[in-house]
Image 1 (cartoon, rainbow, N blue to C red):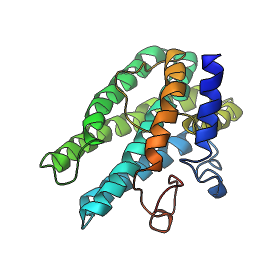
Image 2: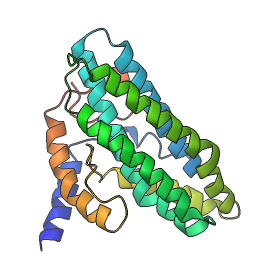
Image 3: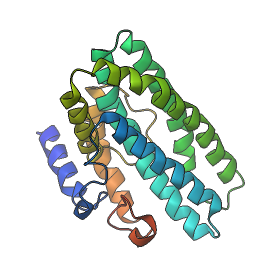
Image 4: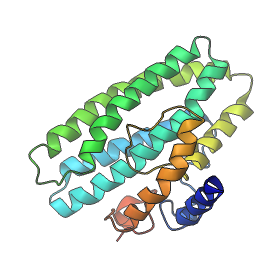
Length: 225
């Protein structure tokens, strides 16, 4: 009963935040898992740059919230869809997936501190740069080694790669939008905790500032003003 109510709540709140469905899920047209992952990585790099180059604190806060929103969803999406696929299709895939989960956990811990920081905090920029450095290494590992290994294993099953890309994008619609490093990072427990946590995160998103859509041109919570 509680689980059913939680799922209904998550679905209902998801219609209010965060993806603008009129944009048709910016990455939904991507034909492979590699394309979907790289698409997210390039967006995250843009958000990092926009925070560092912002001229005022209001702009920094907007891009800070956008970064936390996207990075949190991306991490959980990978943990629920991509890493189980590594376990299934790659020889020694469990070790590869566990390495990537450990990298996520390191970033999540720092991101939890960062998401509560005001841009006037002296630790704001150093904390952001720590996240950038850690995530840069993780992105390189995924794009140059881990995801190519998975795609190679799926070379004779391109339909599965496309389906994983779609599943990755769909899953992110129901994941938490803030960092929760104490939560499980493997299904099925991550799925259950995520369904309970996501509605609370998305309520917070309704009262947070995000970049205006005309300055973003990509995915953004609907409450962006």
